[in-house]
Length: 91
Image (cartoon, rainbow, N blue to C red; front, side):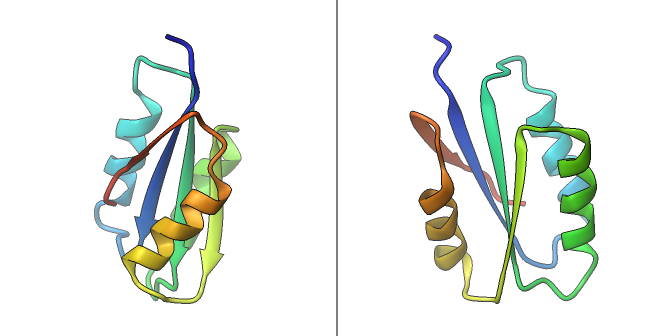
């Protein structure tokens, strides 16, 4: 299988766990993925952490939006996903 998988990660004030979450996705054996990080109005350093990883890995997209809740963030991710399959990962 070589079909693209879109991984949608809603992010809200997750600076304490975000590095571990993103690294676990980046280090997957299956490489044909896109990681969509949806910053949902975080007040901590989450957005800059997301941007740091996006600069290093072209498979990562960062979307910054006003806080609307996890469902709103997931829907934003679905609107931007280009993979044949979609999965969600909590930050």
